[in-house]
Amino acid sequence: MQIFHNSTFPTFLLTGVPGLEWAHAWISIPFCCLYLTALSGNTLILFVVFTEPSLHEPMYYFLSMLSTTDIGLCISTLVTILGIFWLNAREISFNACLSQMFFIHLFTFMESSVLLAMAFDRFVAISNPLRYANILTHARIAQIGLAVITRGTVILTPLVLLLKRLSFCRSHVLRHSYCFHPDVMKLSCSDTKINSAFGLTAIISTAGMDSIFILLSYVLIIRSVLNIASPEERKKAFSTCISHITAVAIFYIPLISLSFVHRFGKHSPPYVPTLIANIYLLIPPVMNPIIYSVKTKQIQRAVLKLVCSKGTHI
Image (cartoon, rainbow, N blue to C red):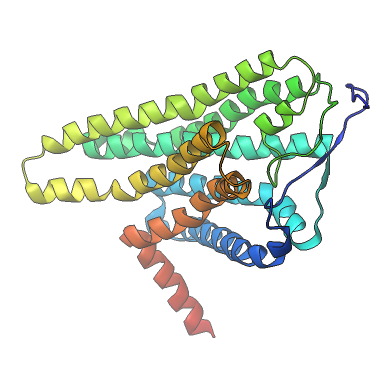
């Protein structure tokens, strides 16, 4: 069996939906709809936030960051997933695989960081409303955005570079329709203890820590809300958090489900992990614009204003 060292990188084979290869063309239809919904919805959110002056507030700037990460996540996987379903284009070079893996994990880590920033935004808005504008200035929001990008890049760069030192002499068939760090690592015949330890550290230091701080933020938010005397004001304060709580749930629940399937779902049908993995990357980008459009009146008004203004020009 040929061994691929650092000087000769392998070509990997991506996997569609195992056992359902005959139905790839049909499966591509809902995936196309999901991609179109995600890309159009997040693009619309970005457009209305930047063109509507009433939305030039910290909450909506963070929402535009969330939409940007969702668009990036969609673009990172779109080519390989639809390429498999439409053209059976399963081959991907080692460097292309590492590049895709980097951006998938980068936008995932960025989304986790943005959700944490949004939790902080809600905490400041509810616990200290008079100083809200002074604390979350435009400069500070820009600094937070830069920190989100820098954090993900710094954590992921060594993770990717560590894969380049590995040799690949086993099957080159990946388990997903895109390149995923644990998948690539498992195909190596080298010692991957350092890679595994670094991968676990990356997850704990990003999504793990972020989830703890998000939970802590909501404990403090609940304490602040309970100190509000008026029941009507309490309800109003809680209502501003519903969209964010839902966004956090649709990000972390598929992530936890995928982890459980990989760890305990060895006897499940082979297409189950693949479908959950694809859903894990698609559901947040699809649902976030819908959630914020339905639950946030300011976004609704801005979208209706845009639609009406376009209608008058026709």
